[in-house]
Every structure is written in C-alpha cells, then in structure tokens.
Image 1 (cartoon, rainbow, N blue to C red):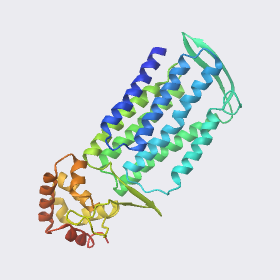
Image 2: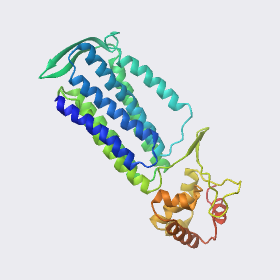
Image 3: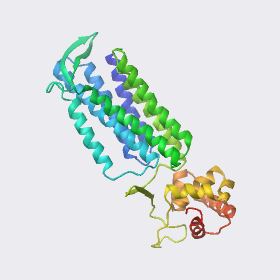
Length: 329
C-alpha cells in the first residue's frame, strides 16, 4: 500500500510537468490545482510511512492542506473557463473561509473539535490514524458540498447564459465534478483502507488537461478579465489590424458577442473556424494574436478575416464594430 501511495505521488509530480507542456499560457488556477493534488498525495504517502502519532498527524495536515484548497482552485478555474463575472472580493472571501476550515481540520492533537480522540497504529506495514470524530467534523462535509454545488451551479448558469464555448464542454466539466463527488461519497461510506481520492485527483487532472487542450485550440483560454460591478469585459491592448497607435478602445463583452451571433443571420453562413476568428476579432484581438491562439499562421487568419467580411457584407473591422450596434441592443 505504501508503494502505491508513493507511485501516486510521483505521478502527481509528473502531471505538473505535463501541465507545463500543455498549458503554454500558465493559467494560475490550473497550476494551483496540480500543486494541491501533489500536496494531497504527498500527505497520503507520508501518512502511510509514518511510525509515530506526531508524524502521522503532520502528514494528515499536509494532506488536508491540499484537500482544502483544491476545490477552491477548481471552482475558480471553472468560473474563468465559463467566463463568469464575479465580485472582486469573492476570491478573498473564499480564501478566508478556507483558512478557517484548514484550522479546524488540522486541529487534531491540539483541540477536540474535529477529532474528539485520535490514536495511531501500523497495519500491514502502513501507518493508520484511528479517529473518533468531534462536533465539527460534519462541517468539512458541508464545506465540500458547498464547493461542489457552486461548481455545478456555475456550469448550469453559464450554459444557460451561453458564455461557455459550448454545451458539450459544460457537460464534460459537470461530469468531472460529479465523478469526484460520487467517488468521495463511496469512499466515505466504506472502509476500504485506501484513499481512492488520491487516484481520482490524478484522473481529474488528466480530464482537465484534455478539456484545456481543446479550449486552447478554440482560443478561449487566454482571457483577460476586468471584474467591475458584476460585469466582465474582455479587453486586449490591440485595437485593430491596421491602426495600432489609435487610442480608441473597441471590444464586446461575452453577452454582446453572443447576441450578435444569435441575431445576425449572416453569422450562420460562417464556418466553425470563421466563427472562432470572428469571436476573437470582436474581442479586439490583433491578427497575430489570433494566429497564436489558434495555432495557425497570420496569412491563414487574413484569409479567414477576408471571408468573414465578404459573407457579412463589410470591408473593415471598423464597419464590423459599427454593424454590431444594430444587433446587440
């Protein structure tokens, strides 16, 4: 069993390396997710090789450090991928809640609030904590279910608002989250002697990387958001393909872009790739930036742009933004 925990921990470290290969833009929430998983699996491994109660308690605290901040990281990643606007104070408030929860779950050995009593034994060569739960133990379950419910709520809400790249990606995210909920519930209902969540976390990382790779191909992971009064605006320092020195800023937020796509009949004539390019143009991305995000050449983007303008009956980016005024209300 100790060897299995060791292998899982090594795999979690390797997954961090895979993350750096896949995510060229170094998304902070993705990195935090992978770091939390590695910390969790390190704690499980250290607990399995423990020889004393004190060492086992510290190993347990290491595991909880990752476990407490992992759902926070996943929630923030989902909100960003789903392009959900949120108050600036929300991350700070959640961190404050996490710190309080971390204090509670790591209080074993000091206070009888999470564990009323705790002892240590070595079973089949593996260190095991024997726990008698205290009055605040169920608070951790409420904490986790709160995060899980928040993740599902974000996915459903943004799917209805059509701010995600597609419904199928939302469903994919939902299954990833629900899968972890099911595994966690099964693990808590049986005494299997192994932390199956350690393996589940690795699988979750792989699924997230898979989805993130798809979204990078859609050019939808490099999103710079301005959170202000509940409205998220997508900005870019570039202004157009032909006037980089202009001081005028043109951009559309996600809802405006979706409205334009729904109301302008000409958009339906565009190919899937042309629609991707059009979305990025409406976010006011420069041609070279669009090419980088979609992993194609600038000349390819130029051809797509020309085709888009022709199908929409316009001749320039300025005409495009002027046209949108009639369709976004």
